Length: 234
Ligand code: AR6
Image (cartoon, rainbow, N blue to C red; front, side):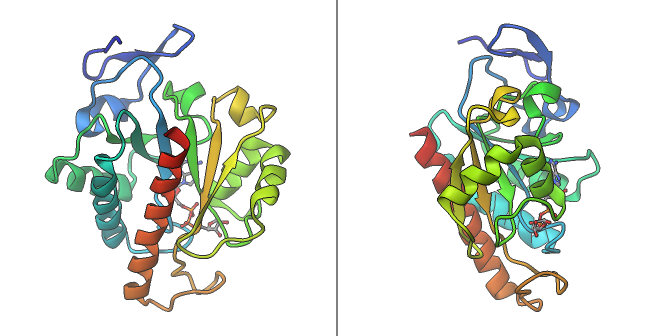
């Protein structure tokens, strides 16, 4: 397999050359990039926006869980995604992952819309995670609304066939129907919905600032997500 130099460019599977995002190049953990398809899970930071979970605590848990799963990944990789270069959670996680010497081929951060990673960012992720709500409903806001809208009605139907609701800390794997634009345009084969702990009093079942419970549920959420991803790629 061919490998590009650090921070240069990578090839799509069609052989076309596409530019890496600035963030990947600078990177986030400075990865060498392989040009073949590598099983990749792109995931947003669960619970840290609408659900108002503390960023410092969440970044510790993300790095802890990534470290735990890194050895089980074989050739697969995990990518934490957020929309902006100013993302606090991305910079916290980047710094902590570097400190713990997490292999940059197995984990890095990426700035981009999780629904356009291939078409806009040149990063092929065959699986993406959604920070869902307990009813697994489209809409709301944040990444949930973006993923349901980009995937079209096919995702809602496929989700309903798998589950009607989700408990905090749990995940459900949904294979994307091949007529979904996320499948055809972005080459995403599965969406994994994850429900994280809710610290927002305006949303259902808030944890009333109980971070003992909250951290335990967030750990469970990442365990469910990463195990789900491994079950797809193995
Ligand atoms: N691409 C990449 N990252 C995104 C995108 C996107 N298109 N949109 C948001 N993010 P949130 P939560 C990042 O609020 O805190 C929903 O209404 C965002 O910057 O989506 O778990 C659901 O229905 C942040 O880093 O999820 C639930 O009710 C991360 O994704 C509730 O919000 C998660 O932000 C879940 O809240």
